Length: 311
Image (cartoon, rainbow, N blue to C red; front, side, top):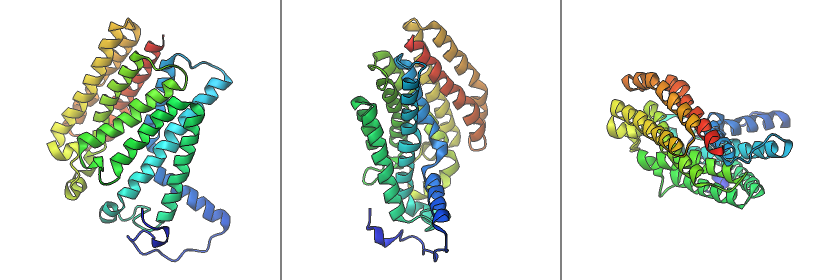
């Protein structure tokens, strides 16, 4: 990261408008929130919740629910928000070409702002992780490594859909699930395997976000799954990967004797068939529909599996 005093180097900064201290603070907080992308917070927070449920140690009460709330806050707004800020920072030169209106390339947010926000979120997330326990801190640390490897050069794994999506999937689903589990109990073999299978399914989900940016990705040399294989083949890969992961979960739940949970996940998988067909026919224009149906059914299956192995 370059020196704070150099500015973004991407667009001339407009003369600052005269704002009161209160108004300036509101603008700063608002732009920080935009950089942190609240829409991305759900997946890791939900995985943390599922891991906590799978542990069998989550109970009704002020202390366990307070501990859960702190963990959700850490997994969602703090750590996921931090990873989004880092990703926008690393994409600033690409965004200057494709989306110059965004906060960093447009100069609305200085690099100094980005550095301070990243440092604050990282420090807060680390403190919370340590408070929740050493094992939670371990999984959080691994997640931070994945986030940096995804965005930062020279690795910048996001340049290839297979590697980049894998890092996001394992950190957003698997590591978040396991962090939630160890926050309330000892990690079990069953919980670990289920977390890994849902990480595999999340690899497919990550690809859904790449259809809308195919042209820009191809131009900038980012080899997302849709860029590599085309829309239709990539869409088929999405539903296939998600399906294989869930079938693995279903088989294991039945094998372990969790028949009710296995049946629920099987039903939720069957219900995905309609949105799956619609998505394959036109992935670019059915992305929102697919997110609201198939992916929502997928995440409810995560909770059903967690409840099953907790019992």
